[in-house]
Image 1 (cartoon, rainbow, N blue to C red):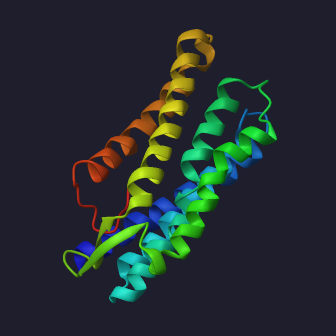
Image 2 (spheres, rainbow, N blue to C red):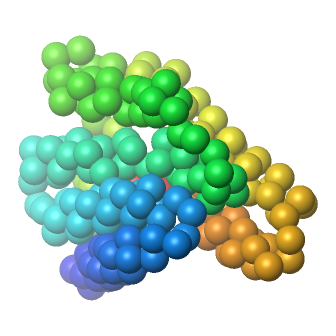
Amino acid sequence: MTFTLFFAAVMVIATIITFAVGVYVWRQQTISGARIYTLMMFAVSLWSLLTFFEVLSQDYLTVKTLRSLQHLGKAWIPGLWFLFTLRFTQPDIHLSRKLLITVMALPVISLGIILSDPWHGLLWGGSAFNTEPVPHIELEQGLWFQWVIIPYTYCMMFLGVSALFNALTHNSRRYKRHIVILMVSFLVPFAINIGYILGGLSSYGLDP
């Protein structure tokens, strides 16, 4: 029970912090990419909030439903991350409608796949429900997850980091501290995600 409450507390803190950061950045309209960053923080906040409810849930159906609903937040994060880095590092760039559709079309399709997964199993294969150390589902990755979501996510992450690295080597020293902070704040969860996806790292419902 103590472990469950600890995980729940982590998710509450994450929800509050990311939402507050989103509100703060939204008001800083002089920052390039502020609105995109705000949307990304709100997506992370929704993901964290739904994970909080998942951690406190005790039955298989509720946990599985909440796990699927988390994609309403996290499906948008890779694309928003890439678009934010473009706007942040190149303030004068025009994010065309074609680019926005190209980047965000797959999350929209994925949401449809996620909601209809019980009928085709493209997102998740088999699953098992465990109650220790916290109630969580161990899910087998389906074909859509393995061959579409993972490549798309890592592609967006890589392109975003590349944009930041390019700016780090070419921009004035005035902005380098901000870029370094962004890169570090990205690389830590990215490393955890790699461990989760490729290394079998168990997160007990705290999906990285």
